[in-house]
Length: 301
Image 1 (cartoon, rainbow, N blue to C red):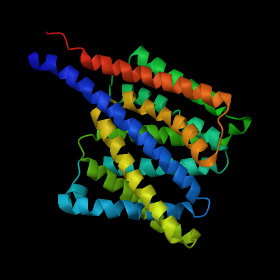
Image 2: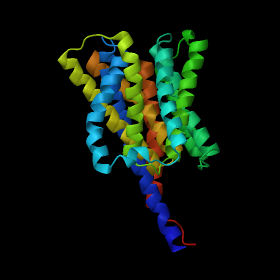
Image 3: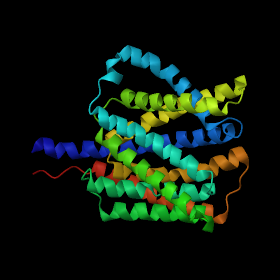
Image 4: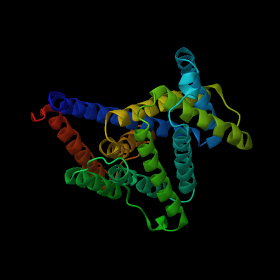
């Protein structure tokens, strides 16, 4: 009984750490999006995917060698690991397919539905407890996304279904990652970048554009930052329930506003500022509630 009484605060502290890691991951992914937008204006997606994976493996290879090849080869539930890699690749493919037809704001709106799916799937599949307060905060956060992005009438049709399918694949990816939380972080990241490297090797030769040395460095930076972001997401999902940490991906729209202004000179409209304010408020509500719960000792039973 005493162990049970002392375990709950530790679990709450772990949840707060998971939230902070997810916030850091979103920031790094947002920085990657800015670099990616810059690069794909000149190079093919396959090339960017290939060289970012090579850069990531330049960092991963010594770590894998030190840990031993078994950390990649001998994994728990290998078929579930394969499913995770396929989900990761599929959701990226859906995003790029949708964004070629839909306005970026519309595609992002559909993808920001991911936390809603994660919260639902976490309750149904992982049996995580999701109280009405968290449900409300997630729903309010999504309302903020819709206000910020204002999807247009062009959002209807098969491209919308592709985008919605991609957001569902993303949600399933988060659930599978949470299920495999016993897998070492290095194993998860290595598998993801191995799949991305394979995809890049197949895709890049069909749309090859000569590189200059400066852009190679930028693509390498995309790979290293992306690897660190994936590691943060994986660790976050090990430390905290998926239904708690995944909604913090709403903050990506906040970084999009800030970085868009600083890098591209985009001035946010009133609806973006309003939506971002709602998103921040919903995220802070969950964060501070979890932090307060972390301070409350479990009752002795």
